[in-house]
Length: 234
Image (cartoon, rainbow, N blue to C red; front, side, top):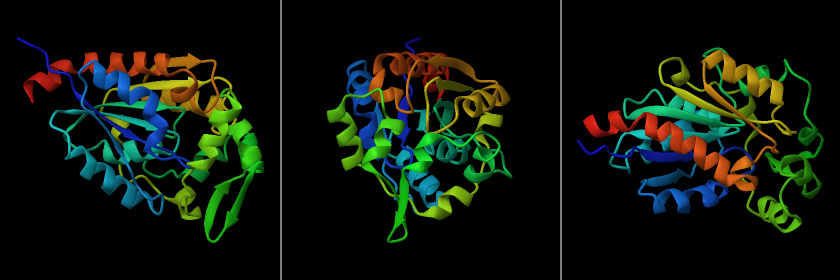
């Protein structure tokens, strides 16, 4: 029987949009994967989860959800959807039912990026100087592009709950950024261990999908291959 490749739905973090996965989508599409990035407003986690579930409805096969940073909270909520067969976390949050971004991160040392943000017009913005802490292993030109295309979240996102705990029932893969200065690497290791994820550690900043896309693709490919049977029988 021919095995069908699952679809891949990407969920971005704070100070980002779906373009942060541009180095992954093209190569995966070339391999025959159906890919789409959820584009949500960073207003409320409930809205972002709802948009992600709607995005899942735009693909034709069972789904691997890939979440970066805050996108980990989004896939933790949206991943309870029956169409989701696996979860890939990239330097990502992975809350339990009673946890928020703030409660998770407060248990670990404060990372450098939070000294380079400002609240203006009710939105949290990353300063130009903050990019070296957020994505310091990119070229200066790429860092400027990250800043120019940033999303600006509402502060309430830090206190919101995901509305589901998909990692308790779905297989998971986790990428730890050993040089991450946005989400503490030890917090990432805690999440990965708690969910029993297949774990990879990369010598990267917070954005390995931009600085080491080939390695991230390898992880997504591994998750997809592990779920080809589910895609074939769905």
